[in-house]
Image 1 (tube, rainbow, N blue to C red):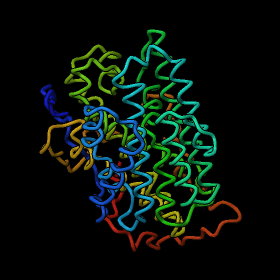
Image 2: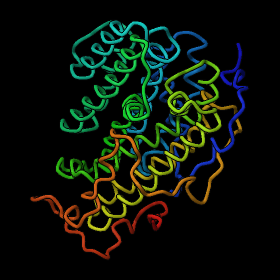
Image 3: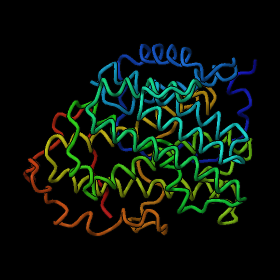
Length: 389
């Protein structure tokens, strides 16, 4: 059987794998154990039944994702459960969205998404097929690890992810294509980014109050990080998706929308992503100026996900030949601090996110961080500052 990377012969455009990422990567020491336990679960779950599908599961190296985006102190049980979830998501995408004809059948996709949602919410409801049964088991695992409020948020995050897949299938079925503004929303949804923010809270064993998470600046940070991670995944999967004429990739969207060359599309896409990183840094600095220690750790951990995604992408043979490593740049390809011209993300540049009023902790919380205190003095990786405009 051919290696999962054997056909990846599409040339890599200049700059595609040159990353501006001012965060230091970390890796959980139990990554090999997590990988073994998660693959054992995939084998028992039965949703990767053929040798080809099993090879894809192994090549994805999901534990190297979770063990890089979650803190090095994360509990083993949480790491294994999160890694199993990532395996499930990749396998579901392969079965119904990515490598299958399912985009032409959004009705069937809607039915299987509904089964998965109900299986997570109601673990006593049996469906008898591998994907909902595996999600039912994940629901049980996370109920043993988290309180009901976090589990409910995870259920909403699952619905968000699956609704993104259904949105993509519906647009495909009508013969239409996403523009860049809509694609930025789609990419964050289908990538399951919302789930990671909940796992970060569980990893610290101290879920944040809802009023913290719903602060516009904090919500913007989580959305930006999820979007950046999804766009970085587009960079790794570029060669495979060009070979398959895939249309759901940032660079394919830009190339079609602007009528430009692939090389110009890559440069424009990388510049867009780097401007998102700059805005993330600016909003992050504002939040860290007033956040209490718990919120500061959460914001600090969100930054870790950017570095973790970059590092994981080069290890996943699902996308790249073994041995390919990213290059890191000292600065962004485009340092323009102005808002991106896309309505779907315009609110990330709202002046209110950086205004003094945004530095007021919500009523009833204990977030009374003094200006000048370092809220992440115990951080396990390098703190960065927002570049000057």
